[in-house]
Length: 290
Length: 244
Image (cartoon, rainbow over all chains, first blue to last red; front, side, top):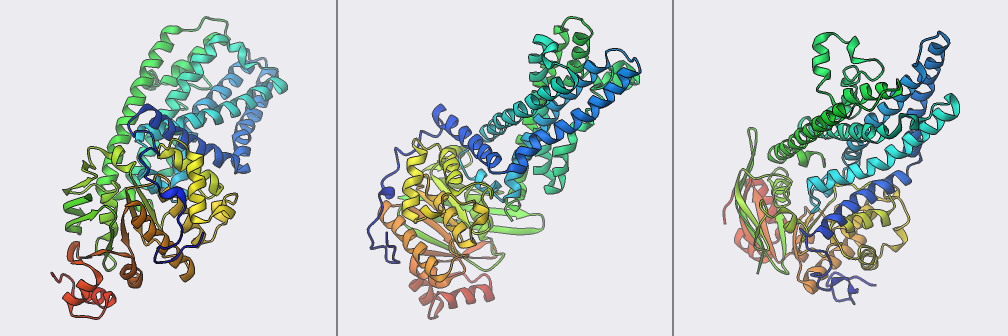
């Protein structure tokens, strides 16, 4: 096709009236299509980046190997239950850690590629964008945990499935908490700028000592135990230890953790809405395009 | 028919009054230019029109809808391209366009991408990563992205800034035809006065956060008593808030 400045050349069929081109913007079909766009974009980015694929496996494997051999050493010192406890903790911690990191990094990718403004001038709504990031993170979490679980079984003979049916609520509760933390990290970046992006990696570690990942919460000082009770992950790790000790799944604790998760997500989404409104009001969103 | 109607927009960032009082309209099929010196408030105005910046006061209506209340409906009919924006670098061009086509809720995203690829003659770039493209090629991909949803209003911030004269001329021709043949409205900023003279039906000059002159290139030159748009620009830039 030849294009000239006076616009006289033959024109391709793409300039037809576009009224039927898109689904009605508020329809469910349009919303589903927009979320799919976010997910496919991130999946394509993952596929095109061998480093990112490598990273899904690398860090979890490093943690597993280090902690695995620590547990073998402790076991040789006749410390009871230590293999299953610590390996279970390492694996479940990765669920929380990955859920938080992957969603936050998905958002940061848009900043790093100066694509954030392109995203914010699409009709993709904040909940749709977040849903896309969350769905994409599921893929990476599943890949990472599967690799770790296989490795744990092959090297240490620890089967993650020994946790039993409790694995489902444990993982779900940790993922939801991780996503909530990611929304908080994203909100901080929106509010304070790119300098706050370190929170995407570090915020989850604030909760590691409180949640009793590798030890019972009872070893914490009493004031910290009160705080830990309001961390959903605390109940998951306590529950995991109970199950691996041969006990039943403490469903009451799981239910409480579920309530806490709902509160965490609600607060995180509220914070995101507030900081996005603030970023638009103060012109901070525009600056991410510079 | 008015596609865009912005009334009395104002925006202050701390001590800086970025936009003081901007009112402008863009009609269906019209190519409107928004010109002004650096720091005049062009980008802030565009970003308010796109919902990236919330105005302190004033209203923005597009297609008869209030942007603040009907953001999703409005943005589904608008698109934007700017030379300072990027795209996900590791993605192939095809993947970028496919994902944006979905983000605009298109019914047949792949078919629409094929149409736009043909229109912009970017077929040879489809299997290349964005990061491997020259800045001129990236500009064409940005424009392709901006046409995906067949927008009723296309907002372009320096659309040909990174293009060589030949590519710039071809893109200008394309944009003019987009407006003429499909009735799209275009709102363009540019520091290329020749480009603006050739493309724009109406030009809004902004200075000190206010629209200080509006008209065709010929009308503005006549009103300012100068030969061409470049001299109008120089007068506005050097004298500040001349009101015509």
